[in-house]
Image (tube, rainbow, N blue to C red; front, side, top):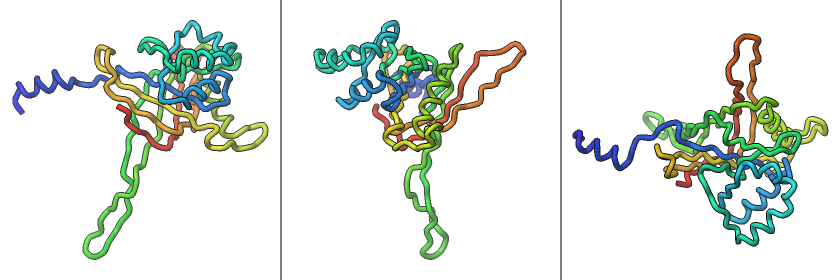
Length: 232
């Protein structure tokens, strides 16, 4: 390939940057009235609904009216890259809604291997591919002063195993969904989108507190998921 061909490829394909992305979490139903409404909305079809952040504080109070609004709008809500996605909001212990996707500091598209088994008829053995094998999904979040992000994921874990009742939940009750979107340099075009199905948190990371001059407090989260698919 000569220099001219290289320039042409750079012009048409571009070079991806690692800081042009959005991560959206669609939590399982049951965490709040808002999440129940989100679940009902998602079941209507593959819609991406966007709302304005200042209006989220009153969303729980109006949860019963949202479906009526969607009916009036025939399920069509305007989208805007600059607005947080309704599926990515979370509720803290006081029921106040916050946008978790805005506090996601690091996301990833995890690795995928082919699980294989050895087969030998005669001669040297062969490794036969069997199925996909996914690595865990790790995200890093900035923390609010009251650590509401940590409280949210701890509550999500409590859906999996209730520490008071000592009971396990059904899989479908705690498995959510996550989407990671990659954008071009100008943030004007979504160039790739990955959906992670049946996501749930397995590890809430350690948060070290210190008396010396500190840095921004971050929370590392590890998730399991069933599989992922590329939507775009």
